[in-house]
Amino acid sequence: MRLSELSGKEIVDMKRAERLGILGQTDLEINERTGQIQALLIPTTKWFGFRKDGTDIRVPWSRVKKIGSDMILIDVDD
Image 1 (tube, helix red, strand yellow):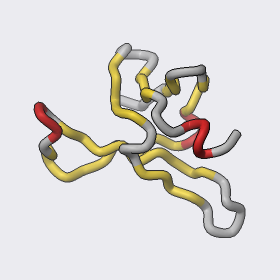
Image 2 (cartoon, rainbow, N blue to C red; image 1 turned 90 degrees about the horizontal axis):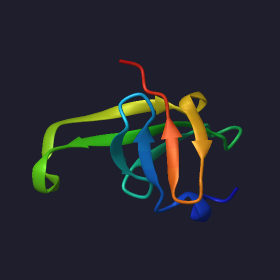
Image 3 (tube, rainbow, N blue to C red; image 1 turned 180 degrees about the vertical axis):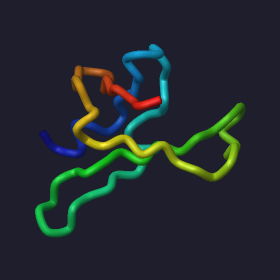
């Protein structure tokens, strides 16, 4: 799958049924040697897109459970 095919998909936490963001507004952590995606870095925001505390939610790629036509389902640790 190409990165362009992932861009624009909503990222949803399966356990909480909560929308965390859109891929394209997140960062990817990539292994420089292998080129594989290691994690999604999802910025935490509050109303109107203002940063809450400047931290990111780091979701290891192994936590991505399903990539659908319009969303990515993940299983986030508490």
